[in-house]
Image (cartoon, rainbow over all chains, first blue to last red; front, side, top):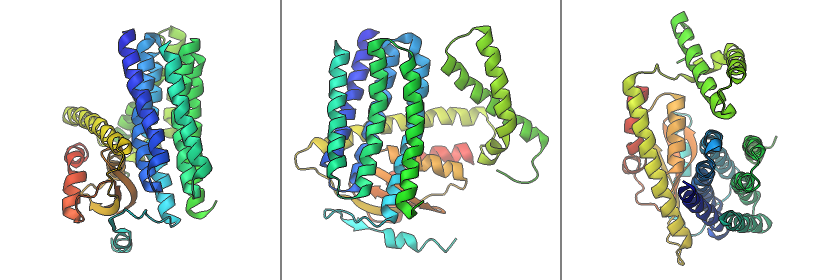
Length: 110
Length: 83
Length: 173
């Protein structure tokens, strides 16, 4: 049980590190949000549940914390992404397509 | 033993995020880095609680996650159109 | 669905579901079966349910059936599989020395009607490989894609949204 917990926690910690590295390395806000949302949500999920497996009497509470992070992290990151688009931050040079102007014209229709 | 190793790796991650916070060209970059730091810190607190064998740390991390979720949304609202 | 003709039967059912949900969270949080904990949990959950069941009702969750429950479990398994793939994908793009990214912003459409279903779909898209929901207007999603494969709305909808939407359509129809 101990070994399984340490293994799962190790995977989670590795992804947390990769998420932070992605925050530093990727070129613009939207790409950073991608790394910041996916890797850290998954990493935190695995780290916290791994600790719950290592200490079985804590399991239920760690499950609640992990579910809470799984539910709220996409929402807050979505709010940040929407805010950075509304405040007019441009895409990086390597972007290939930007359909935001096409998207705006759906606003009045329905 | 392995817990100390995990804590070190997570600490390196937090330092990387702070580097982006210092450098970030726009305010949104800094907000994203802050949001990542909070999620990483929740995991950090849980492992710290395991090292010290204190159940209370789980409550601390849960409340911290709840508060910083609200904080991130408020920062996003502020970036979008001011308070 | 928050229609004005809310029968007392629906109201009772929403109260029951919300109470059970809150009590489950209480059991996980307290993590003990001592009778005082259980009684305090019943008291506080009832208090919260009486004050807040209107909000739960306005979420518009459909009544629970066996079929919906089974499809929800399948949906969770699919979602977990996609999350794992997403992480390996993004991690590969971050570590690779040349950074093989091809970012862009595209539009996809959905056939779901209820707000809660659209929210679940948007969050699932955010957690899955290389896509990130930026904005929603009615039935169109604005999605940031880290590796753009197509610019067409129909094609992008088929690649990004369809694998979740077919389950959500069964759950919320």
